[in-house]
Length: 300
Image (cartoon, rainbow, N blue to C red):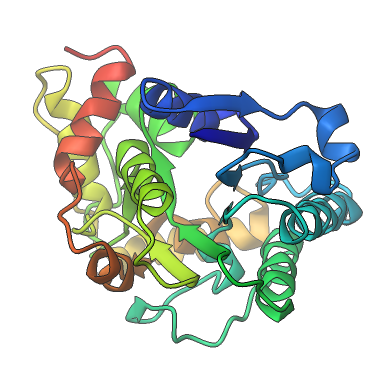
């Protein structure tokens, strides 16, 4: 079975190629192939896995047009080519940010999408385009909305938090009670493999997350254990921290109310729909996945 993958050199792509390469013939599409995709691009291809995209720019320095050109227009072009090709399955890795930037309670697929950023809006536009096209018989599409993905090779926020833990810097926000969903890249690869191999899973949108949301304090404890250290958790009264953040708003200090909210907010994502569709447990628990990630940062 031959699979075509876009974004094969990125963090998810590298892990997915490693995960699938023993069982499939894989072709990582080049930029030139993406630009010139048509019905002949996917002859003799079972599935197209679309990972390529412009990631969310936390510093807000990107040209907003880039998000729409890459996340929407490129996806539209690839999906149009898929629809008239011989390929049977189209797997699009979107993001929970296409649904919501903040969550009250638990985010499910039934929530009305309300993205606030160009990143989220561009991903949602791609999702809506895929859903709006008539689907030929014998074809299926899967729109996956992962939450925060981590794993070996990841250089994101978890790596930054690990560096603080490694330096012995206490976590000062342990007084806040928050819960966040995470996603081990191995669990994501497992789900993608299930979608490739099976024909009993209905086309649609699926949120992807590990089973158990964790607090930031729990994550700090897992990272600390990876270097055989006790977690340094400071439970400073939240009211005091919020007062400092308000002062930061006025004096332009590093800690502002907006940054504090981002650090302490809850973002829980339900994986019930995808697990029910697959009918299997995920390979890794939330904690085991984070332990593997922590070990890759240079722990035990």
